[in-house]
Amino acid sequence: MKKIICLSMLFSAFAMYAQNREKGTIEVTPIIGFSSANYYSNESLSNSAVSSFDFGVNGDYYFNDRWSLRSGLLFQTMGSQYINFEDKLEYFTLPINANWHFGSTRKWNLNFGPSLGFLMSAKANGIDVKDEANSFQLGLSYGIGYKIEVSQKFSILIDFQGITGLTEVIKDTQIPIKNAYSAFNIGGVFKL
Image 1 (cartoon, rainbow, N blue to C red):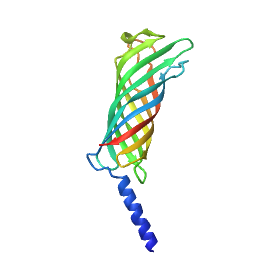
Image 2 (cartoon, rainbow, N blue to C red):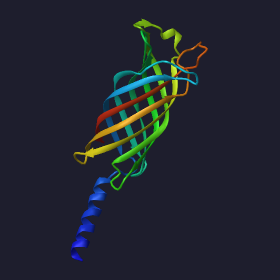
Image 3 (tube, rainbow, N blue to C red):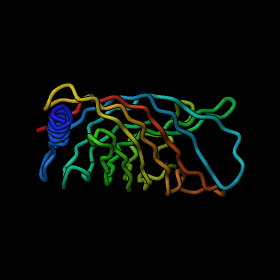
Image 4 (cartoon, one colour):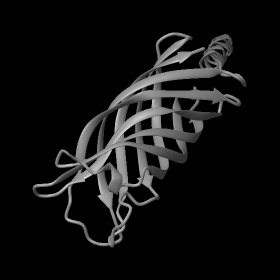
């Protein structure tokens, strides 16, 4: 019986240590990742994805050990590729996500919410076409991640993030096309 009590106390202490995220806790996470993007439409498209690297920084403000508000500034490349043609659009993206932390130690997270994209450049086969593209993209972002705790103030985050564009990419077109984006990221989580 003493072993069970000692084990329960040890587990409780570990769980309290791992969940040490009170209201007002802030975490900052620089990230880098590999992304894939493509266009989608309600009409048939014969295109394929473009791949790139993404990077940026996220921040989480905790309301309790289960919920935080995640936002940040990310550099993301989107677009599509056709047989001999490639569109590449570069955005600075601002996600505004609810982030739900789950599991017994709250190391898993599931996030979702709107994403605001600001077009920085748009090129079709290397030619500047920024004037033909919409300068703003509203999207729905979502993702799942896992934190590997290194110390009380530092963790490593591995996550998948996606964005489904809700606004059209091109200003004047008969075929409405939108961005679809996904990325696998790794980041260092710094608890302030």
